[in-house]
Length: 224
Figure 1 (spheres, helix red, strand yellow):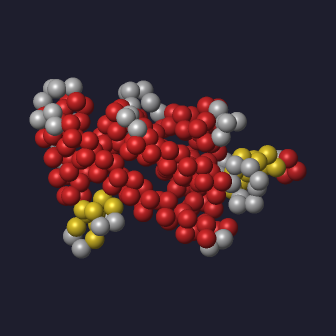
Figure 2 (tube, helix red, strand yellow; figure 1 turned 45 degrees about the vertical axis):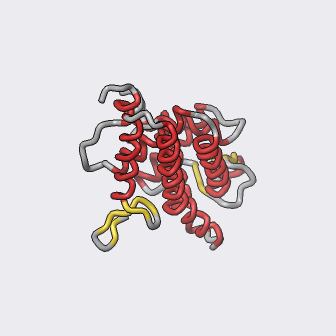
């Protein structure tokens, strides 16, 4: 967000503050100061968690409270953003297609959807991508014979009477929110070095999106 000539990373946190944290973190890596690395990385991850809560989760929660069907498209669109962002955080990439040079945006949905429900598969992810993500983002509508409703009992409900497949934006959001809670709990409270590094790298991409900057991997691999 840009306000009063200042770029903010999240509520009350300037982008410049994040850049300073990352610079201090990189210095700690070069100096092999494990205590500093641990503390600074924790701060970076906490700020990313705060950014997602304030920019996305809080917005959807407020919309759900209003109990207005008109918010269905918007909430599902945010769900799509959160699904792809989750994939980027897990893999430490700026854009989904950056992961291995062959990744497509669809792959994020094929990877994340099975995490939302035990009955979902990679094929469910492909269908969600085609029915919801592509159509909502590019055409402001769902795919043929696909609808969005808060009233269905399941996340994806086959409404046979009218031959419609109905997606429930609130139920999807609840599962996505639980997935993020697990992600940040793993990053902050478990010794998961790869996940910590990947979230930090995503924060770096955001903070330095208009500036040239050496990647975290260069420091981790000792190339700098």
